[in-house]
Image (cartoon, rainbow, N blue to C red; front, side, top):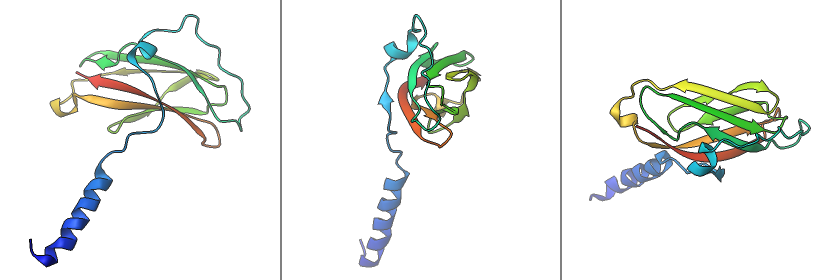
Length: 143
């Protein structure tokens, strides 16, 4: 390698390291924890708006989601949760709040191109009005 090419090679390595997705921070949940509906469902925890939000329960009908299926979920949080985001490195959406601390989502999975049919790290983020977050991580797979 020529000496003048060395700075460009080092810059390329630094940029590549920045492009590598970091593992999101949050409490990991397993399939067993999210595929079994709590019985009874927990009651949303009453907290003041200034307190950090809390995710109490997460349920999904599937964590391996086939093409053409409906992906349904419900999340119970503290009552001070202003928004609930469901996110991966490829998509993000806000869950519907039916009442304080009770969120749900329903997504119809269209036919996905093969390169998107793989495993993802699903990040569920509860935010209070000040933007303070609570996070859980769920591994999912699109087939």
